[in-house]
Length: 160
Image (cartoon, rainbow, N blue to C red; front, side):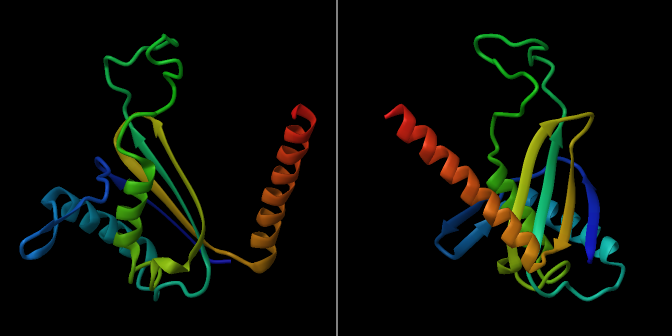
């Protein structure tokens, strides 16, 4: 099974497109971030061609907790250990996925399974992991969803 793992140091940028008079516009900071992700991805690929077939895309966005962040739960921040503020993880994922297209994979439509997370850590960085997905892996994950749905329906029926 092919697996590509790489780290990108720096502050992750969320995807941010603006539509103007002359078409779509991307902020320079976003372009620079994508270029850095693409460079790190290309280093990890080490000259290999993009992966073919269905893929799992896992990414961990890490940032230092702001100095003003509480160390213990408060009314305003009941989960001080979690990065629950903007940017949204899906916007950061889109930026990283776009940067990996034509480098790690041919088209981000190949991603059939994702696992994003964002958390506090020692410095700004992301860790990307891309793996080939086999039918039995996807089927097992799907069955997990089906079982969870069934449990949820049982609980709702008992409560209602």
